[in-house]
Length: 340
Image 1 (cartoon, helix red, strand yellow):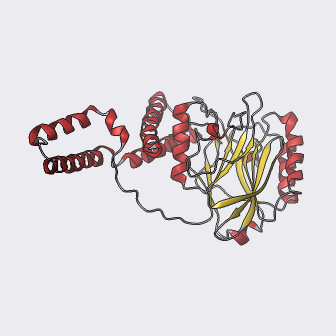
Image 2 (image 1 turned 30 degrees about the horizontal axis):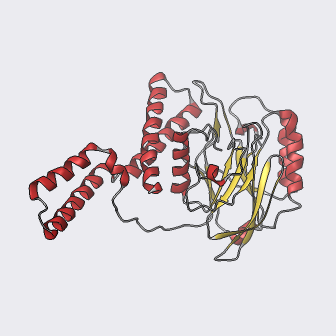
């Protein structure tokens, strides 16, 4: 789903998308990582994900997959094949055990038959509760591609595989396609899918698949939702990135010059007043930061959806670029706060 992760600005946006999705298990494709160093994963994965991830290394800086999970899951076993990596995970709270297989299929037709056979062989190692997902670089139906470049033999072979493994294709709720060429006159395909076994529904009876907003990739990220989660609000605190703004220093100097700090009592009073002023400034300047970032993502999604129906004009094309730049800026601020 996510490409070009070597770009630091893109890494910030990807990490913010993963964090805001509140996902328990994260699967990335086309990582272009050929290293097993956990420090490399940290450039994209938020800190609450385990660093002992399951990784399929890239070949010559092409391809690559990773499966990461939060600390309330335990790894039972893992393996990798030519185009996929798999992990058997245990949910510590409920004891539910399931297999996650993350794939990045070959882009050339000459290798896709072997890829389909590889997927068939994966069934020998999985648990009954299995989710197979990723960028398959295959389509099932002619409506899954906006152009007329179809390979019906590969479509039939892919559908035969899904049927023989008794897999269920989770429908995508809010998009027709998952990939765009991102050209002035783009083409679209649904190359990314999520398949589950019937046994998966015994552990997770309610599943939905939704496309998230993304401004860095030609693929849209997908989230498989199995339950609802609630998170408490994070209290406001002194943020180190405030020091990047000259008005913060001006406020501190203003308060200190007005009241002085001749004794302990006045020092404490000035400190409290300064903190109160800075909190008010933060709220006014950054309180809607996450909303702004989400609005940027929604705006990009809006233009992407329009582009699926007709080419964008020059003004729309330029506006989408500016919105992406604003999203990078906001994501960088968000990342600095989480880093602290």
